[in-house]
Image (cartoon, rainbow over all chains, first blue to last red; front, side, top):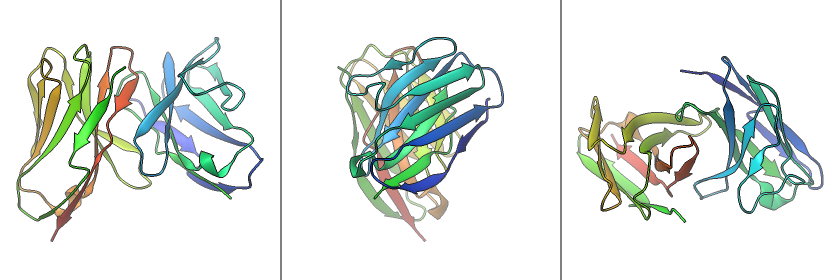
Length: 110
Length: 111
């Protein structure tokens, strides 16, 4: 199965700033997925990222707030823009084998 | 819209006890169902994946069952150990590798 390296593992950021989260996969994958887990909540899919095309966003998530890049078949980034305390969450990426997830990024916005 | 619910939300048991975690989903048109374990700071670990055509899967002390028609799955943990303490998540997929997750069960096994 694939192995995902996700960075950073945690960060504390000031409101109004942006943070970019990276996921590097050790093999080529067609689709990558980004999830958010708000405190006390379960995981919610943000978007699906395919190489060479715009990411597909789920209802309630927009590109201006969560721009995603997918420059090649092993890498993707998620940016959380203009952050507010409500963005404090764990963000995880996964790939299209259905069961491999990154270790998560714990974001705290102050 | 698919919704996944897990009961109980939290569970505390003494070591050695057998236990059952429950998951229910509203739309039976699923491709597969998966149980994950979530440990703080360690992301998700896949425990068992059940395809829609299967009734159950087993791995060691874990057994997961699926009743698609009734929209239910159970995760059975035999002879629980303190190392089993974690949050257990149930998730369903409609076939595109993206999952809808349940609310989770926080399990604590007391030594």
